[in-house]
Each structure stands twice: as structure tokens, then as C-alpha cells.
Length: 176
Image (cartoon, rainbow, N blue to C red; front, top):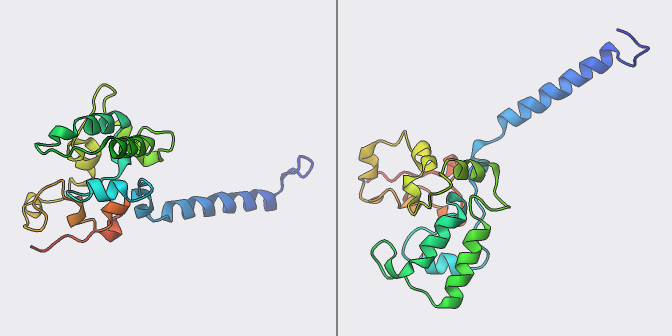
């Protein structure tokens, strides 16, 4: 090779090996790392919302969905889940700051948000394209198992869902 331009076979080989090695490392990275969502700090969200159902990761819905949901707690899926105003405001702010369309959103959260029409504010995570895609291999008979009961019962198969962890390696599908 032309040594006058500074390019030698040794330099070229080093570059190829470095790029190839980096590509291999990226390709081998564990996929479950991407299924970790940030959760609100403190215990208010998990204690208040998680006392009745899974404390869903805010990054599974855009902020407009969380605002709508928190504004309608008097009729929260047929239940009165009303909170004192300070708690409601604290939780709403926390959910918005970690939502799929927040400035802190990871690439996965941005993809979730990108699949939701801008004029939509879905209230059920199970109706989002992301949920359907991630669960498309789950047979209908599995959803009917007693310990699962409903598609919204994330914690039945994802024991660390209240921590925002939905990694494939952590899935434990109940046998009953």
C-alpha cells in the first residue's frame, strides 16, 4: 500500500479488526438489557398504584396517556381510585417525566411512542402495538391460566415488573 499517504496494510488490518470486533460485541449484547424501564423515584407510585395492579413502567405509554389516566381516577377502569391532590400531582409528574415521549426516553421507549398515533392517548398497555408484538408468541391458553387471569397482569410472568424490568430471561410463566 501507499505509505506516503500514511495508509499501510498494518493500519488497514487494525482498523478492520477493530470495527469487526466492535460489531461482534454489539451484536452479542444481551437483549434483556433493553427491556428495563426507569421507574418513579420513591414509593408513592408503587404503593398507590401497585397496591391494586402492576405498577406499570411509565415508558410503556406517552405522557398524554398518563395525564388522561391520572385525570380520570374517579372512574379508573370502573373503580374509584381517587387520590389526594398532592399524591395525584406527584404521581402524574413522575409518570410524565418518564413517559415514552419524555426527554429521557430510551430508544425502546421512543419506538413504543412512535407506534402510537400522535392524536391517541391509549389507556391500556395491552392494546399498544408494542405489547402485541412482544406477546405475539404467547398462546391464548396461557393467558387463561388461573395465576395470570388477564393480559394486564404483567407481574404474573414478569416478577420484577414493579421495578420496570421485563427482560426475557426473567420471565416465569405460571404453570397453572
